[in-house]
Length: 264
Ligand code: SF4
Image 1 (cartoon, helix red, strand yellow):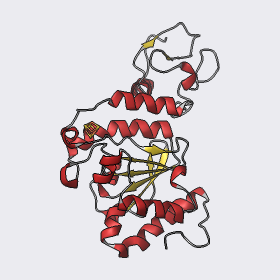
Image 2 (image 1 turned 135 degrees about the vertical axis):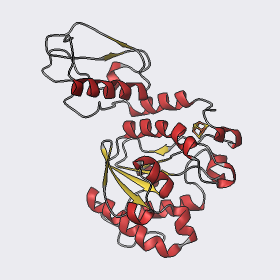
Image 3 (image 1 turned 60 degrees about the horizontal axis):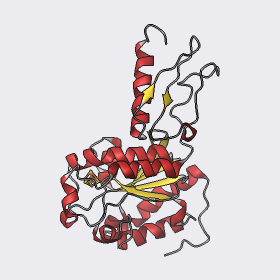
């Protein structure tokens, strides 16, 4: 280990350690390394096989890539779920029947992120299974995909009372677990469904009109904002606008719509 690290390296090292912590890896140890090489070895909660290793003397810097690639995604997600446990970190736990973790393909190119569970989701423990969920399924089908092809989660994992908007402190408490899920799934595109998801993910307080229609760099993904399906049920005229957003995603990923979009 060099006697002192420059500020940029310290910052990168801190970000890397934080990433491992978010992955559920808490214990670190130092081992002798060749001059000029840095290595962090992780032990305890995840096996070293879960992460592409950076070995001393490999000629590869610890910081060559932006973030480590998680190899065993189901195991990494299981750790996040176990860390949540029977979560009582915010007041939303009081009214829930089920904690709604997230569902879908761990290797998905697209991750949809909504606001929080509603009554149906709370009852079934799965995101987007009610009427809004049916519309989301139709939107996914219109993109030429199946629900099983994507990953779906919410900013908060417990149903707010009377389906109210989750409050800032509730989002702040719960969203680190979503960030960990995003870092495991590492989708090419995140679609933020509605203002709550968009504002929390982007940490921007802006109108949907301003948030929509452009790409954002988000962690290692691209992020696009569109309307929440529940809003589209209330105002179906906006479906056309949402479809425009999804077409941007399709273009980016090279997806082709089926001849006739299902559900139309
Ligand atoms: S909303 Fe999130 S932080 Fe709050 S109790 Fe549920 S799981 Fe825990």
